[in-house]
Length: 333
Image (cartoon, rainbow, N blue to C red):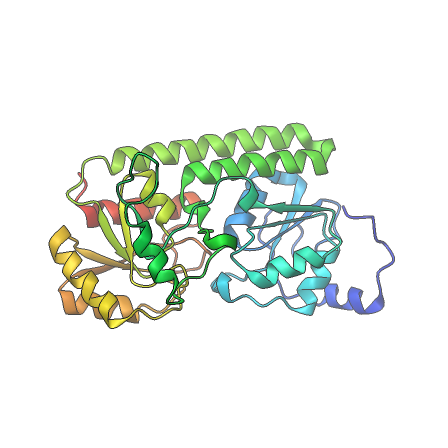
């Protein structure tokens, strides 16, 4: 669809032609590069953003993800080829604070429509613990402990220390979807009616998912679950749970011996049965902790990408698998 910059350089054209970035959407032509189609070309930073673009854009969009399936999004380094592709797109959809190289590339790009999902809902600060009980001011009672852990460099955070993992809360994800839909309507007004309809359908799906989590976790034996890294803070807060992470928001950070001992004691005191790990990050620490404490292990997928190892083919299916895993771990009936 992009016709604003028809006279690109030979170098840029070669880079675009040679792109090795995965095209996600059945709505697009196989192998077509962004900017070279007759559709509304959207470059998405990673899977949760690409899913929104596909669901909302439908047949009118060509969606390409900067992050390959199976690649850890936090580790993404933007290549020259990807920069060239971004330049020829109609829109960029990303989540500022999660992937620094993406933030920089989009910030420097001439792409007209830049949609930062972090501006479409509210973000909060989370440390190795998130959720739990809040005081009358809505602040976590362990906030001081979380800030203390920040001093030890165990956090990978959004600007100001905010947690970027908003897509794991269906309610916040729906808020982002509504904002993306409005941005698509403005950028591609010829198809605004379809974008509104598709956005409403997606919000309805996410509302139903929220209800499934609310009812599915209502009757449980414990509120506490242990994860590899602190990706599920928003989900925990939404459903009255407490996430205890082995490390902080950075999936690659190593926990201290004191933290491991604390989690072992906590698991026994709170009736924790399971240590969750994820498919895109090493499960070594989670399995070591579980083995030492006599606990089970299972997958709780942060949905940063869909692979053959995922328990589902899309966002909703994997979230429903996450719900089942939490129900088992928390003793929900």
